[in-house]
Figure 1 (cartoon, helix red, strand yellow):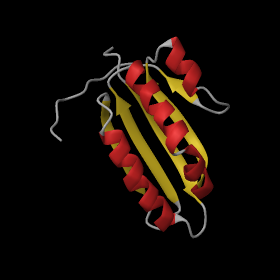
Figure 2 (cartoon, helix red, strand yellow):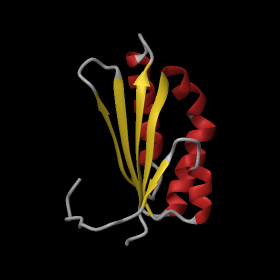
Figure 3 (cartoon, helix red, strand yellow):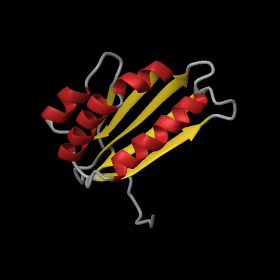
Figure 4 (tube, one colour):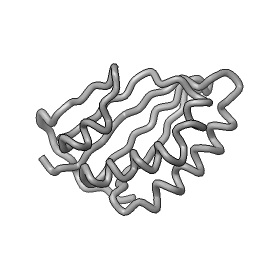
Length: 122
């Protein structure tokens, strides 16, 4: 379709860690905002603070790879101290290199099947 790569990443927040996660999220969002290919970076939280879902969209596979490397080197250790990953779904048509970098046991890759995207403002 358009070459964009997105993912939905759901995590369970470890008990008592929601405030620390919020602080880390602000740092991660600021870092991602500086990445030119980052199009959407949104976090959602359950009412009880026990589940967080991240929705991310990148202009192309190169931008997704840039973000993945930045996450791995700057944030992964601290992030995983605060959460337990429960689901990671990649959407779009990532390059072979991006797909290899994003692949882990249990990850699901979904390719475009139909529909449309309407323009929207930030």
